[in-house]
Length: 392
Image (cartoon, rainbow, N blue to C red; front, top):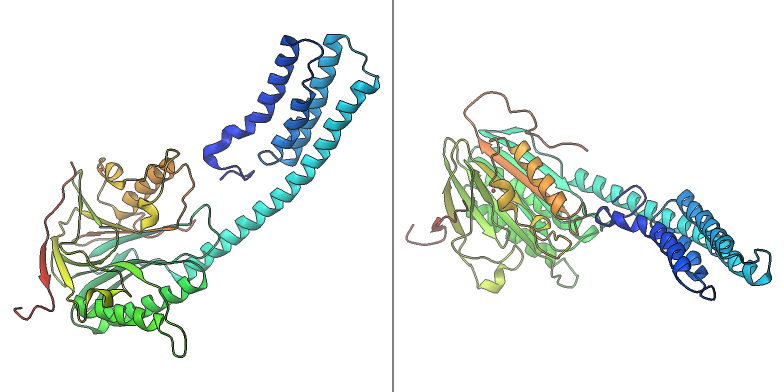
């Protein structure tokens, strides 16, 4: 969104008042003298109010008066007659009204920007950026606030180095506002504890499911309907195989040597908070994928894939990630966000959280690996294990 509040993809609207003025003058020259174009001139400042500044609106009103004078002079009409004075008075009155409307709309836009900034600040406080290095992984995170929202979203991510290996989570809670903040805090707290103390990934996922279920059934309160999609993963100590549990979340993408592999779950699973719909004690499916040293794993929330262009086409991150990119999580996310911004014309309709990581041997984290302040497509067939299968 521009400084004047005009959406980035609709900057052409700022030229519409000028086009009306020019069209009015041309129409007046091509039509008989008894055809008046003053209604078009009077409409120009009103059209300028929502897309231009206060000075710009005044300038359009003054240009409308000058264009009207030019029309009268070119046609040899009496400028001081009552029939000519009334249209000019109409332009002046509508210009004053347009300036007033411009001021009201500018104030509303400023309030919306302030509310959006506060929401993003709260989001960042609830969701601190992970360290640039976590165990054997180089990590980067980005958070992009929606251009059309002023409420705190439910996106979350976390990365922890534990004695079981590096464990990470990215998720998206249904809804916005205080309810989403409550659910995000609950899930982050549950993950922080479970990632450190519980021995395996299915146990961690069950703890998150249990926490979400308790959140939906508060003591003495009505049962809620909140749920969260999530990807929970771990890289064991000294291991090269990534274990992944996907609970209804967009599939992570493995970027490796110009190729992008969506890590689709072998068995679809319900989001956190809805596991009871799948039957009692539903097994937790863990998929396993090789994580090469020079590969970058990219995880994101649906704010990325649900972004649309002017034609309503959803964004596909695979082409952008299929281009030659360095194995640097920060630079990969920056390239992805730049392409996303071009696709959505600078206006996301939902918040987007992104997490990227790569496995390294040793040495300092590359520049840009941490969070900033402010695409042949392969589809792997993962091996799956049922953590609750008694045959294990």
